[in-house]
Length: 106
Image (cartoon, rainbow, N blue to C red; front, top):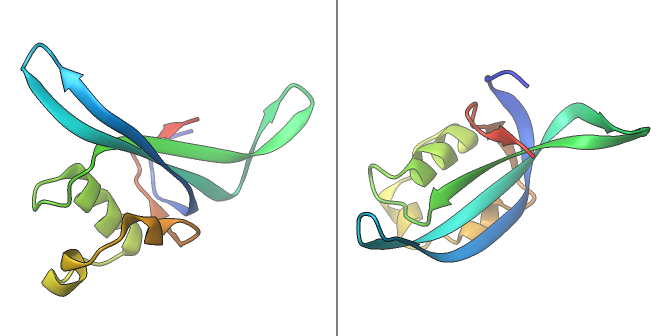
């Protein structure tokens, strides 16, 4: 699947827990978001399945975080300070938008 913008619905939010990086001595809580691309399928054997793409993120909505950038792209708008205060990541489940173009096929 080529990079680009795809209409998609978020179908999974996976909490990957705290991931340690011994090389840098850091630990971050990671998540993975999975989107189902609307109108696209992939054939595995003789079965057709909805195409899914996913991306791993550090669980942070700071100004420079990749998660925040991806969610703003997906929503088509920036977060207001008020939205950021009480944002519940579970709200993205089942919601439609534009998937990040750099997400990976699953």
